[in-house]
Length: 252
Image (cartoon, rainbow, N blue to C red; front, side, top):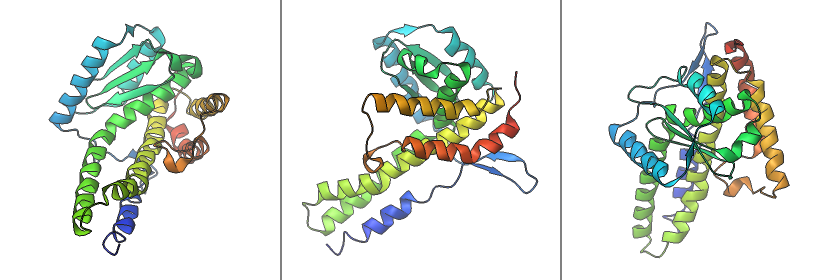
């Protein structure tokens, strides 16, 4: 096991490299870290292809609230090479998703939990932030690095440790980084919704409603084995950025 053990600190190091995506400069001006925002043409093409297939196989419906809120948010999240497309799908599962290239899907099942335009802005802005922060490409690169390290370790150990190494990588790198991406999307999305004229406090209210909904369905799980942060954690992290978001908020 002497070759495997050094991989665990390395994995934990990789998982801890994230910094806050929202910050203020010495003049007090608020900024969003966009250093990794530009998406490769191949990722954009992949996102568009998957989204088009999804539209072919799922029922697309028009929802005026999604259209209204989405149009406002698209204006505050410019991204080179991206053509924003926000589509509502008939699906009772309360969910939303994003794909490279500016493709966002909203399930009708999440609209009752959104309740207000501000609640819906929380959801859409979160998905938009996944795209502007280029989380899809980051995940792909991270998995390639971890997979390569795992293969080397397995070979050094003489084989037979693939499952153990895979589990270690998942718990130490992939899941924590997925949770980091979710927190980033929450915080950046909070700024986007504020800039679009939606009260950032509504994001806190939405996640509290979502937390209660999951409790009512018995859907609580250990944060250790979840790709998403615990609801209390994400609410606490949102509150950290709330004062900055309120400075950006101008009611319309």
